[in-house]
Image (cartoon, rainbow, N blue to C red; front, top):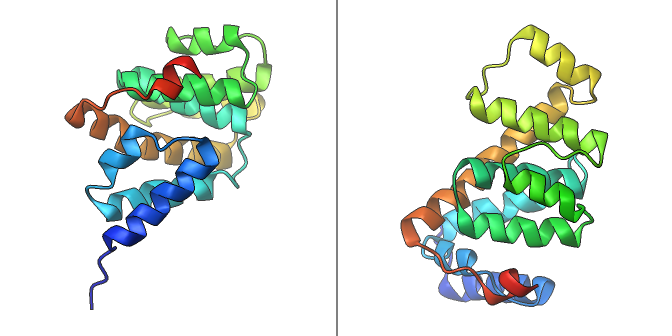
Length: 173
């Protein structure tokens, strides 16, 4: 028997997000057109928060993916969220420019790994894997980066289709 998420359940989820962030992001409103996708996205984010990557590293990955996929909405969101978790303004600017941040070596290593995964569609040769591991990005952390790439691609592509307007809170927050 199939279970379809009701509108009431979706509204409760969106209200919960609104209480946490102070607003309900337009992308989640758009995503709620398909409650299953909203559930996958939010549960994925909730699960990955408990992963090995720090909040700063998670935001850097998601910002890099959003730059790579040219998603203006998610760039604004992860610029804002990155600043909230302590990514320096200069590191945010480097990421927005498609570069590697210089203020934090661990953040730089995760950003470099993300860029390599995106540019090579996941095909990393043994030498690259060895170099990344020596920088602190082992396979476990790489797999978490891959999960974030997949999750962020969901919202990037939805925003491309919907032309989601950027929330005021993200522009001035």
